[in-house]
Length: 56
Image (cartoon, rainbow, N blue to C red; front, side, top):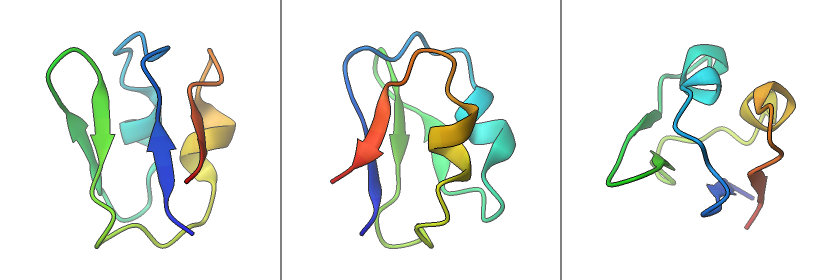
């Protein structure tokens, strides 16, 4: 199941830096995950310093 980024996101970019398939990009006020490209590896969730990423 793809991950989602909550409004707790501080737009630090750590998730995008850890994503092995580069499916995370800067959105309007927070980063967003392209659900069609996400491989559900969890690297972004582990890399988020504010725990703003979870399973959908």
